[in-house]
Figure 1 (tube, one colour):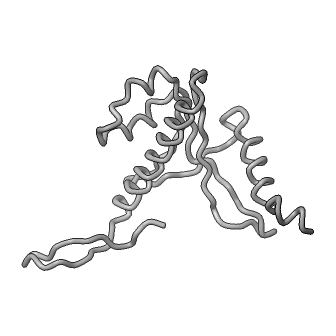
Figure 2 (tube, one colour):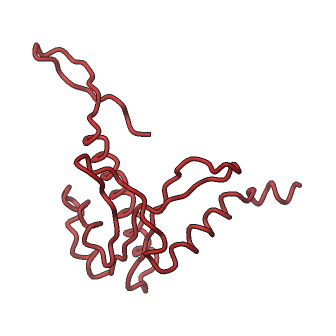
Figure 3 (cartoon, helix red, strand yellow):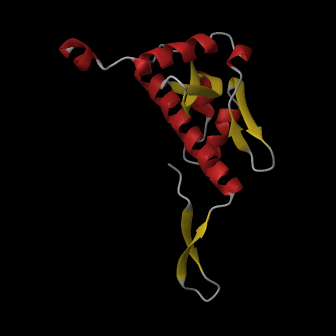
Length: 149
């Protein structure tokens, strides 16, 4: 749900909108992903003081399979040790770059526009099983619907 257009100003100073370039859209998407990853990691460490680290995987919907099932592709994997998170300058925009410094961080940015590309789950132990489990959970009806049926 990224915007196609952003506010801008014409050379004469009048307000207008302009189309985002592909690079700008990809940077915006990466910033959105990074902020969500870091917020989730920070929350996990806050509610579980005994955790030494948080490993996080980001899955993106890639449409539907021919069978109507969601196609999920991992786009980020990383482990955030508590000690590293305690050193992040959370009030600075550069904090978003912490996703690249996570242990075993894996992200694929393709081409000149740095498009976020799916990772091969076979390259990461346990990731194939995680994707399969999330796919099964997404295909299952919510508990209320299952009880009513």
